[in-house]
Length: 496
Image (cartoon, rainbow, N blue to C red; front, side):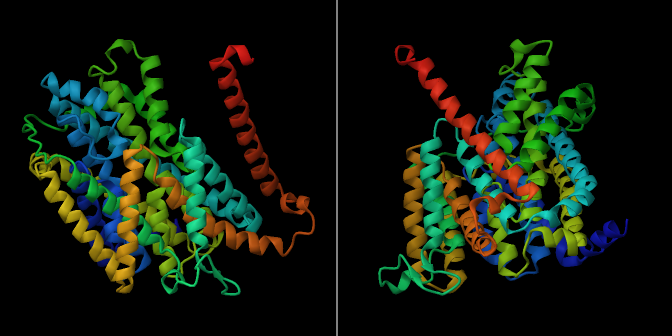
């Protein structure tokens, strides 16, 4: 109870509340504009948040992260174009409902399901926080190294059908981290006597290039489009009453979101598809899925909004981000010399509780805002794509230059922007590069610390948690290898 009150005191600061309001409403607007998304918005705003206290910067970014999916459901339902990537599954049943003249019902269900998923997720984590505070101190350098390695492996495996490409891109991210001065003896690595490589590749520069600038290039290269969604008529409160008739699907979907969010590299897509598959298999009318089934819409929106709060667990407890957005938030900690990990739960539990309360409040703010402003948001969606591309490009370069007042950083960001466009054209994932840079840095530091106490290979797994993590890594790699061999034999029976 004392921790909860301390969290309320931190959250009650005027600058934290302003950041929360700005982030939550801004995230809805960003999510409602097709072609931008939370990753682009957070990448652009990241340099500006470094000037604020960690709780203020994180609250603003969390607001965007947690609310963008609410806004992303609007174009997904009205014009069959997901505002954010994780709203893609919402189009399956949301758009058919709009075509039947039930757009107000679809939006109302999306808002109520998103709200339910977000609230359940945060309440679960607030209850689990004391347990996390007990477990976190048992993670030393060996355990965090193995957890980071497990995170990279899970991120790679999560890209089904692109495992090799994701693995190579993750290795590229680890390599990019090693460029410049190494952190112990300050010897140069891979600089080739080039002064501009001495400081290495800044994570924020790479993030802005791969996410924001590449998206701006895509918007500028594609034909100019101006969506014209129809106005919403009817009340948006009815969805909360209808959701009560689907309590089982909503509860199971929220559970999938919480569980998948806590596992690094898994995230919204796995939670959504598991929830959607469960809803379809247990529905009395499975043939309606993909044709405007309210259960499908509820499963999708509940699961994806239950993930953000859960994704903060590996970030706060171990300092290990599970996907690109939490990797960006980790940089806010580093800039202010706040080290997420076991010590954070041990010494700053009030800070952690303030973050959970902020996420709880942002869900309430977003729903209230959406109930009164959905028709206004449909006008925001009508921004021409090329005008949007120019705006994103300009803001991205301003953000890059503001980091170190360096034209070189702008050139590097532009190069990564072009590289990002190539990856998108080839349908290759960008996230493994960012997580490779972040987790590669964590692994290098923790491995150096751990090796000072290791004489034999078995010394690295001589503690229960380390042994368990090592066992999980071996199990996952074994299953992946066995599955690959099995699929190959099934595809080519003659070799079997």
